[in-house]
Length: 243
Image 1 (cartoon, rainbow, N blue to C red):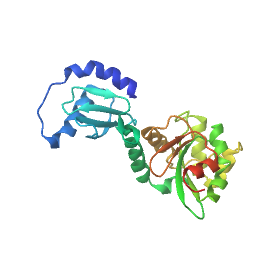
Image 2 (cartoon, helix red, strand yellow):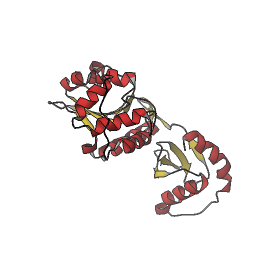
Image 3 (tube, rainbow, N blue to C red):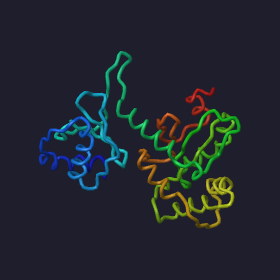
């Protein structure tokens, strides 16, 4: 369920909430239970106090963030902004970045296709679709990224979804004896021998949804921030402070 559906469902469900006095240690569980019951299909990943006093931050399995009061009666959608002496910061995006960082760091790196830099200075996690033109453009610059000290970790995100030609093509790449060579061939528009095996393409596609991937390429940096779309290798290296 995406955030728009959550908003619609909450519009009908909020009125059914009753005020219950709970201790501080029970608030998060109470909020999670109420929202799960009120919004069919909503899977709550975490509930925690937000920076804004009186509001709790709720993260769903789809990567959406909503805010609620501690009694679960009032809910807000959208990004939470904070005014500081340095300007306005996006509290919600910072929370998303931290969640992305945790999910990526917990993923088994033996199940990704890696193009390592010999003198590694940074690692980027790229959610990619083999047939995406800008993904191919980025792949053409992987050797340049490696020269800058940037290791490229590929995660599968065939935008057409499971049981499609693009999805199966990624499975064949992952199951190939030489994954890097197969990726080079597929990204270059050349054919790859059909292959099947126990593979992580489906779970990586789901992971992409959880970290908020909406298009490809989607580049997740080590701090969890996401760069959406193609960025030239030199500009990416500059943004990472390597030049």
